[in-house]
Image (cartoon, rainbow over all chains, first blue to last red; front, side, top):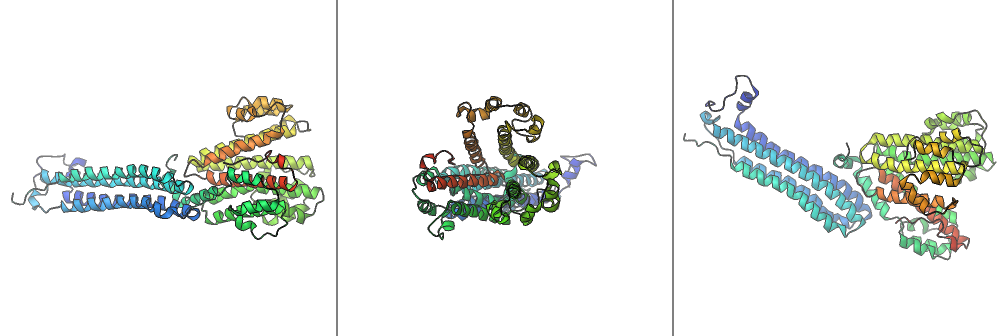
Length: 182
Length: 351
């Protein structure tokens, strides 16, 4: 194991962190990417959904139109799935001697950070879209001309998650593992 | 946490909030009122109402309609909606909804007690009670001779019991005592409701404390105006004011010593939100004050719907419906008694 490049004191947090396998980091990153994204999506869907079914009792016309808010929330989960798949394709096996090489560590951290970025960006995006979707359902029930206007706001909200996905993918492109021949 | 209700409010409240907003869309609009004001007979009113949400409740009524029937059916609709919401509600919303009815409960107690005092038939009185303020033992109220018995026999089992602690005396009931009792109860009720809303926190606390403060101030002004020229002392008068609101505490000190309506006006004009109410009235006029306050209240209640994720909408909706029923009652009475010129005197347009 070549840990000579970055060395922590024999008992310190830095050292403990360095001793965590890059594969662990990668796996946690992937788990966060999909798990937190789905949490955000689910959160948004219940906020929208509960208002939507209530408002649809007096104004049934709004249901099919406002399903789009639910779909926007759902898209957030799909972002998470896509990024998780991209991240897991980045995983490569390296010889045991190369496991703690700087390049391996960098790959592990890159995948970890990418997962966190995507996960939390999608969490807040799902919340944002959910709350706007709920208001959208309520105001559409009162006045149908408001639907398109609020939909525009909702689209801007759902773009937030996309930013996270873009940065996450660029970030994970940094992840290259040491070649097996060395 | 203020501003973060949006994240968790909908777990319990989202569905009902959407429903109550749906109900609000069914309130009569200015166009409806214009049509209703044109009516010549009560059957015309029924016809106009049949196109609104009141339709199903009125359609099976036989033709010689009475004002009371219309009001009864409209109230029935409100009660049905309330019961439906109550069934769906979870804590703390169900407690909040219960609080809304306590005001009617107080009114019913006072109605029955005053009625018995004047030897009216209990059954007849029970029919006049507001259905939202009913409780199981209400019919037995008639047996009570003084405040202590009233409390011990009947009210101890009702939610009003804690409010009674301040007005238990062994004095016999008379008109003055009953009126003081009503106001003491109402004061305790408003303060309790206010504390409860403050405890809920967030947007509910903000909006409800505003609405309740207005209610408390309006009651303070009404108490002052009604007690001018009676034997109620200044200290007793001040005891009836609720301990919150815009007028608390300095306004109350000034109101307590008012001797006529123009002095009341002088006190209230120091408070910018109430200035606009009085600017519409000419000096020495108090009949129109009620309407001016109702108009202001309706305006504030409508504003409660501008914000989402709070319980104020339930309170606002119930109050707006009650105002609407008062309007319908007034319009029907005017039509029934051929006083159509006075129809605009007391109707408060909601939108």
